[in-house]
Structure formats: structure tokens, C-alpha cells
Image (cartoon, rainbow, N blue to C red; front, side, top):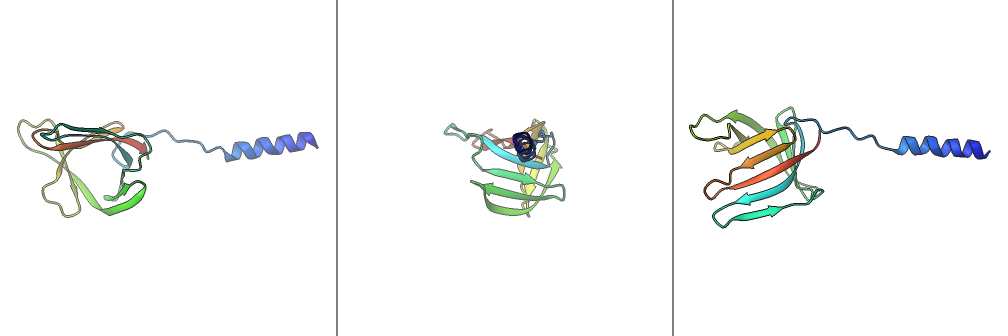
Length: 130
């Protein structure tokens, strides 16, 4: 009987363990804010992991934006190349019907939206989910 009970506990314990999938590089998935910096005042703020300020980019060009894990906005997005001389970031990110866009870059599991040049604010994100 003890063997049966022990075996049952082991099987239930193994099934209860959630296997974590490694975070894959690429734009689609969930991105949590890690740092905001810039402006003429030298603003610089670092955020702890698990803060809940997240962009979720989907392959159908929709996004969701969460603040403290609560849905703050949803809509569409698109990315276009930026053809401007002297600018290192080569992409612009447009949300909904925005015609101006934000400078944007991503590589692997890190992403930056905005720029700290001049009086701008840049936000760095870490990919936390696929």
C-alpha cells in the first residue's frame, strides 16, 4: 500500500510540474519593461522583473498593453523601415492610427522603444514569453 501511495504521489507531482518553454527571439510575444531613461532632466528608472508593464505583440499585427497586469489598451501595430540619414535605429513602430511612430529596435530578447536623444524618453523591454 505504501508503494502504491508513494508511486501515486510521484506521478501527481510530476504532472503538476509545469515545463517552462525557453523564450525565443523575435518580436511576437510578451515584453516587460526593464528601464526608462532620457530627457533633458536625465530621467533614469529601472524596474524589477514581474512588474506587469507588458506589451504583447501578436503575429496578426495586434497588440495588448498591460500596466500592473491589467489590460490598459489594445489595438493594431506595424513596423516600417526608417529612411533617415544619421539615425542608427532603422525601424519605426506605429500603434493604431499613429502617423508619427516611435523609433524602435529589437535584437534577441531585448527591445527599445523611443530614443533618449535630445529630450526623448527610451524604454527598454525584456522578452518574458512567446
